Amino acid sequence: MTKAEVGNIIEFKDGLRGIVEKVNENSVIVDLTIMEDFTELELEEKTVVNHKNYIIVHA
Image (cartoon, rainbow, N blue to C red; front, side):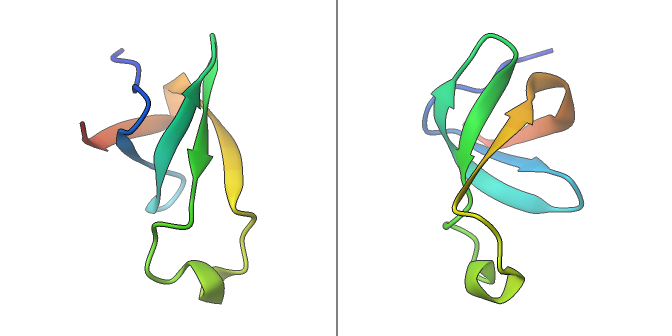
């Protein structure tokens, strides 16, 4: 399993995408505001994603 680094774009949970802001031991903190439909989805700006639950889209 390849861990994401700060600045990587990851995809998780049914196509949600975000940019990694911080890498923790078991998870990453992700900024979701880069998605075009962010305001329509009414999500929080940031979320935590376990390393097992994402793929790196752009390094």
